[in-house]
Length: 323
Image (cartoon, rainbow, N blue to C red; front, side, top):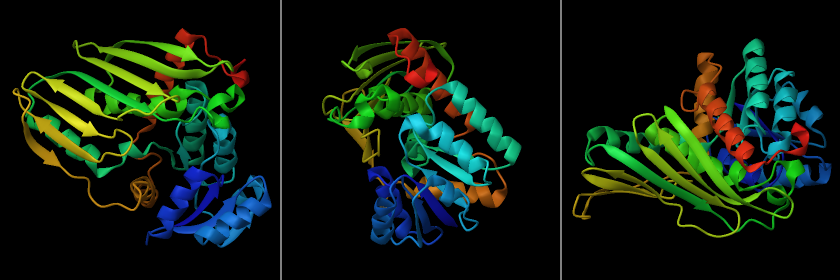
């Protein structure tokens, strides 16, 4: 499968380095707003072609799947550009700026009969199934609460601080605790509330989110662009608890009993970077003629965007492109 990339930043570099080590996919073409940057990126990661515009890339008949790695603010227009040129799309999180944009591009993908999926890598990783299996085993009894956090020192990055790039902690890192809660407790939500500390530029610097479920369970989530966190997810049951090391790329799962003694642990399989699983999922779906990946169905993408819309509504955070 010949992969084209829109964007030549650090995340695109991780994906390009990953695909370079894969047998089922090929770095074919990369596009950036500056041709020199695209050419340098292409040489570094072994792409056949470098493009000085995104239009040039999508007009190339050789490109089969496009990976979009531009700022959140541009995903909507870049997804449409790819779909309107007959390309399957794997788009980085946050999928779009809001649920309305997401719904529009997903409908367009269905009309065009093209695969469109969100690159939220934690949904595709093997350790996600391991965690599902542990929960189904009943080893910690009935889970009643979970906590999850993710924080990085990234407040100096332009994409985080600028409202016109749909910046803030929520869309950039908060999406991971939200997905963790959804994967563990499902989506039968009663209420979702949050508080945020805002930056001088008007986006959220850090936030705290509480989700209550219709069956009485709770999820308490934190994300920050200001400081480093331990990245842990903990699921509390009436017979023990589960600790997930690094909810952004699971490094191991540990099980504890009612006396807080560790009774089992699961190691993460060797991987290239972790990005390979979403690429493999896309290839399987395309081969099967599917329009979405079962690991991250369209319904789940819309739900995550809807949750973030509601949180931003509570905080009064409206991006310029939404006004």
